[in-house]
Length: 267
Ligand code: OAD
Image (cartoon, rainbow, N blue to C red; front, side, top):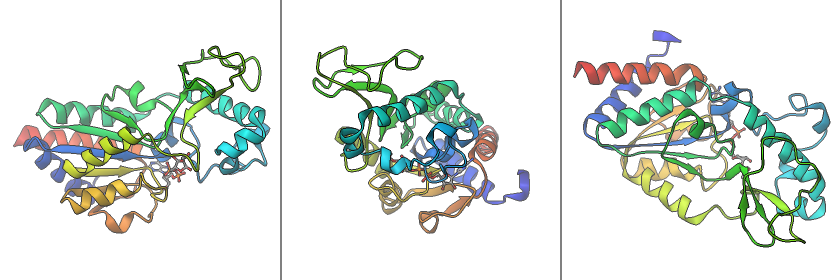
C-alpha cells in the first residue's frame, strides 16, 4: 500500500504522540484481523466459503443457547470443527504488529489493551499480553452442570456432544458468548475503562454492528481519543473514526508500526 494511503501518516502521528506522552492505546478487533490467517469472518461466512460438511447451515443459527439445547450434537460438531481450524491457523502480520505496538506502548510507560471479539486465541499466540476476550474463547470449554473449565487436546472430540469430566450428567460447551447471552461483566468493564482512558483507539477488522463491543469506539471518542479504523470496507463505525485506513490489517498494521517507531526514534 505504501504512500498510496496518506492517512497512514496521520495515524502514525497520532500514535507516536500518544506513546511519547505515555498515554494509553486501546484496540477493538473483530474477525477481519484473523482473515489473513485463513479464518472466515462471521458475516462473510457464506455457505460457499465453509467446509462442505457445513454447507447450508447458517452460523447465526448455531451460536445460540436454544440451538445447543435443541441439538447439542450439531452445535458441538460445528464448534469442534471451528476449534480445530483456530488451532491449525497461525497469527498473521497484523496480529504480530499489534504485539509489537504493545511492546512500544508499554516500553514507554503507557497502557495497551486489546479487546477482541475473536475467540481464536491468535492475539495471545502472537505475543500480545493485554488481551480481553469479550466473546470468550473457543479453545476453552466448560461443564454445563458445574461450570468448570477444561482445555481439550488439539484432536477432534471422540463423541458428540462431548461429556464433562466434572459431572457424570454434564455436557461440555464452548466457553464462548452466544447470541442472547451476557458478556463477561468484568471483562467488559475493563475494556470500557481502557477505551475511556486511552489517547488513541483503533477499531480493526470488525463490522461494528454487534453491541456492546461496538460501543467501545463511542466511549473512546466521547472521552477525547483519536479514533482510527482499519478495514478494507466502510462500516457503520466509519463515521465515528477520525482516520480510516482502507486496507487489510495484515498489510497496514506492520506499516503503521514501522512508521510509528520511526517517528519516535526521530523525535
Ligand atoms: P464480521 O464478520 O461481522 O466483520 C468482519 C469485518 O472484517 C468486516 O467489516 C470486513 O470488511 C473486515 N475485514 C475482512 N477482511 C479484513 C482484513 N484482511 N483486514 C481487516 N478487516 C477485514 O465480524 P465481527 O465484526 O468480528 O459475535 O463480528 C462481531 C461479532 O458478531 C462476532 O464476534 C460474533 C458475530 O456474530 C458472537 O458470536 C457473539
